[in-house]
Image (cartoon, rainbow, N blue to C red):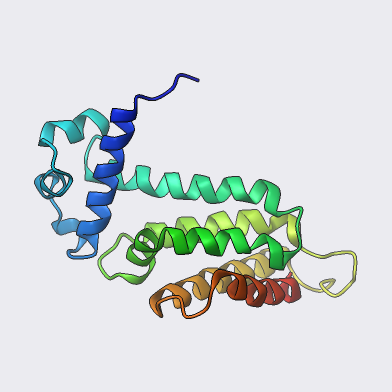
Length: 182
């Protein structure tokens, strides 16, 4: 795979930061390409060199975060719940502005929450305990929906309340609850 020019990465990062910053101030539909260009200190035409429009920029930003979370799924499923969730909560903390904007703000396209939930449900599919017998009478889809919705809800609560507990505490709490649920 060819290495991407650092200038391109820097420009794309500036555009992503600009759109997230603007989304903390305005409803997404009210943000213009000129607003993004001004915030990123770039020419309008530069945006179109990288993205089709503001929706493409936002979708790319969302996809980047979902892919990074998905990469964690690959090794996290081999760990205990409490240990596996620490890097996720650390990731949410590190990317607080993005997640607080996408989950806690009004006027943000709701597709993000739906995509995040679908991502977690997919990640939980291999985690249902069928050996112990405690989930014998439970339907997989119901269990997955329950666990995924609860997980996203706790993340939203944690972010909306200014992350009142450190990532390790959240991981232990949520890990224990998910362990009981799945």
